[in-house]
Length: 192
Length: 192
Image 1 (cartoon, chains in turn green, yellow):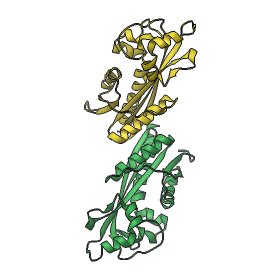
Image 2 (cartoon, rainbow over the protein chains, first blue to last red):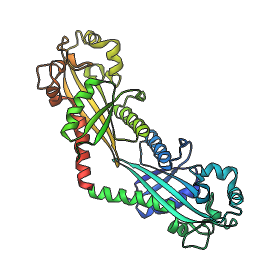
Image 3 (cartoon, rainbow over the protein chains, first blue to last red):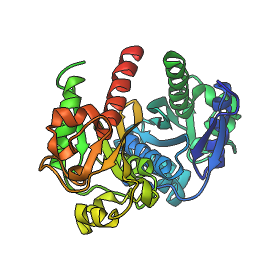
Image 4 (spheres, chains in turn blue, purple):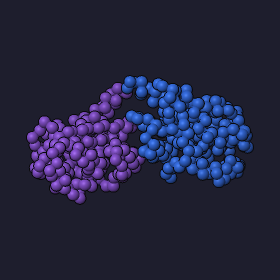
């Protein structure tokens, strides 16, 4: 695997890009951030959203593309905000979630990530989940989105209190991205 | 490979469907004709047209899809009608091509086909070319499009004078479709 193989990561989120870049490099790929319009359908299915974004980007670009989509799922709210996490973050934010959870005993939640990698002749989909709880107050200034209120199982810090390397040890995103990169490498080797 | 694996062939052309169905069956796939709107971009690149059609169909359907696109390329006309063969056939037809070639010595031409098969985790592209000449008059009533005026190299009949089995021995379409099916089978076996 040559070091110069480039994969275009379709995201306007530079935090996300930096998290995934480290993982891509581990597998020998150079990750290039592709900002701009990302076609996202409205759906309750993260996998479908990511797949359609990736197919559209690949149709336009005809080069290897990666799309990753994630959501925070809160047990007490039947999964809300789920696939609409980004919108909910931009509107009611961490404070809105904390307010909704005020007086609620069950603070269990999970982040789910879906990655779709199109690298001819492959189209690979991967998933990653990290369980945890919603903290009682925002902590930390790293990461993005709901990171300041999510404490993954096995940690005492929120995602926003971790540096990228530490977050990647726990994160849903790291798991789903690792899943597609590791399969790509395995498949490329197997097919020679 | 189970006999029940279904592949959706996006085409409104039943002749095309019947030609490809025989080949699909040889590889153990059941080919289902998917009629309706097929998104075709305007491009001089057959491969790009087929790829974008396939990506769009797959995004909608999320099931295995096959798209095949072909054109007749006439040497004396710098490739015309090429990727616009279907439009040119519907407008000026075989008679228009014969009229254009009236008095032209070089009647060399070729059909080119591009197939794109999306079958997770694979996206496969194949090409097929058949060289031949444009006959001086239309002959035969089988096939479709410019088949009545194309005589493949090594044959004395036009495509329209051949039954499907015989046409498939020569045709650009059979070659490009064989290419994607044979690779799919090989890859599926290799990856277990």
